[in-house]
Structures are given as structure tokens and as C-alpha cells.
Image (cartoon, rainbow, N blue to C red):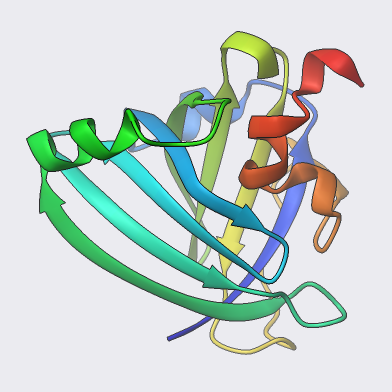
Length: 155
């Protein structure tokens, strides 16, 4: 139940040609407190409830718990969320032995593209594709819970 991931800005759209899968995501936050977030996500034909804890000081690890739910329940819960629904397309790109999840944001976060890679340990190495830019792991402003309240267009 511990998530270990690194996050990067994306400097080109070349990842789209390498993606093996993509799908829209709509998500909102029932709670966006810095100590814990509770997220509702619509992904394809299902809903997902996620609880995340506070990140470690280096931003690499944090508690994460997820539970699937019917799409209709997630749609109802999205109506209860805090202001600032996130709309994005997620692209899955295999690079070496890992899969990068690349999110292209829309609406108030239009123009932002972020890639994440989940790892098995904080010191695990991985291939970095040419389209990968600056690392922003641990930078709170790139957390989706923050983007919902302080969108990219206002930076």
C-alpha cells in the first residue's frame, strides 16, 4: 500500500507515437488536505476511490489505497467533490522494463503534460526517454489535488 513514483514534465509530444494505450480520466477530490487526499476518479467504464497519505520528505513515497466502484456511484460522488475537477487523457508508454503514465491536461490545466513512473524501490533505475523533461517529484504544485485548486493557467 506504499506507492513509490517519480514525476517529470514532458518536453515534447513524441510520447503519443510510442503509447500503447490511452483513455480519458475525470477526477475530483472529496478531501485535498495536505496530510491526506481522497480522490474520486472516472477511468474508462469504472470508478475508483483513492486515499493517499502525506509524501515522504523526498516526495518519492506515500501511502495509497484504492477501491473500484461502479461508474454511476463515482459519477454521484464527483458531484460532492471540492471545486476544480481535473480532466486529462492518460497515455501509457512502455520504456525498457517500465511503463510511464503520461497525463495531458485540459480545461484550466491545458498545456501541462506530466509523466509518472511507479517503481519498486526509491533507488530503482530506469530508462529515460528523449521526451522526458525536468523532474518535479515532490513538488506539491504538480499534485493533482493542488492542480484542482491552483490550476496551471494561473501560474
